[in-house]
Length: 196
Image (tube, rainbow, N blue to C red):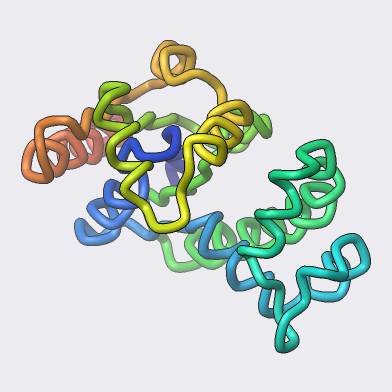
């Protein structure tokens, strides 16, 4: 089974690209979706111990948590120490299940793949990218996004150029969905050929 890491900076189209892999029949484990689920389940108690203000109706309120971290970015490390092992446990279970099913290729969608050393857990890496103006426009169009928040997120991410340098495959999303889908198909095709 080939394990493909999928990553990209905020606003580059990584989530849309992950859906394309899924639509083409490749099982995808989404680290972000896993975190959202953990905030409603097993991460609630340990996160509340660190950020009591983030508890709302029995779950972690991500807006409150995000606002707290924007004020005190040095507290990210404590949060990550709780969340990363829980995400890894879910990822391991996903990989085991796909191995048992006989899946030939799976995708681990990990936003901070390089920043967390995730490239060591995958066979190949796809970096999703677009030009800086497109990225900025997409991100600032999001609800509740500000220049400050965007800058904070970027400060925690490896520069896009560095990610592209390390990638095995690059998917460019500037030219629209059809062009991106074609690139995704090519990645799958190349990996099939390598395996055969």
